[in-house]
Length: 424
Image (tube, rainbow, N blue to C red; front, side):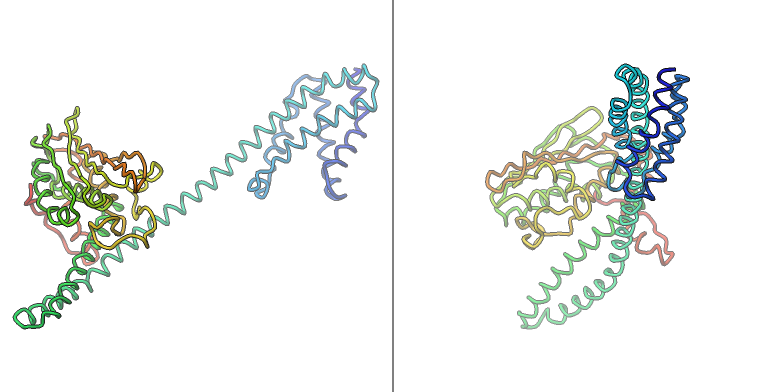
């Protein structure tokens, strides 16, 4: 009874002091005072009954009340109000009650107010988490839309570039035939340069088509028996000239599993390995060494491509496998496919990852960091399953030799007939 009497005695003062300190302006203060009156009534019921459930409705309303502005600015207004309410209740009790009555009142009220504060904080956090989740969902939708638009642009651009490129290639070939037997050496050089540019542009367009196929899950693997050693021998011959031009050393070691017959798309796997080795050549200074090695693991063959190049910083070791994942300033890149720090669209390693993952494998890179003086180098690890049976679900998805044609002729309704892989 003493606590009830004390509550009634300080009610008007309590409401007036809290509303005056925490509400700005007469209009705001009037509405705030109404809320305080409602809270005080429920507080009295809670003290009388000993059941904090009386306060749940108003605490729920307060905890869920933050506006969008409050949420965006990370304001915690209600929890601040309740925190100050506890302090002001102590002051009002000390100022208007006898010492003993004040102690009894605070002993009864403080636990209730503290409980109310914890409840409101929980509601505020739940509201904030819901707001953040909603914002993240909107951002994710925008990112997905952006990625879809990027994939559509790549697909459309590749097709639109393909036609004029074919025309340029055809006319260049005819011009080359006209000057073949003439004395126009300078014109021959010009046409040779144009042809080099055509080939480079065609490689870029082919990469764009591959990326588009990967993004849209339109690629199917042409699974056939194959040997990794065959791919490495082809690679040794292909890179003879760039390795010689750069005075580098390409070391291809024999390792357990390289002569093992497995099932896979040899053309696509050769493309993947080719991209990794090209990348190693580009980022290794002249006279450096690129080493291809491997080993057998349970259920997998691991192929490693190591170099003595400039290395990759830890924060970029996943970025390089993303589309257009180029490192450093692109305006400082040299031209040429295998020149030191040569430029490019940044699609090669993204395509490589798509090919490896289509074979149920994985690829990652290890490097001590980026340093153009100490040359820490990088090592790419490729894991391929030792699949010895052709009938595997992976065969019906992802890559195939004629999928570029499939994508190119989709709009015209033409059909494709798969062909066997001649390099298997």
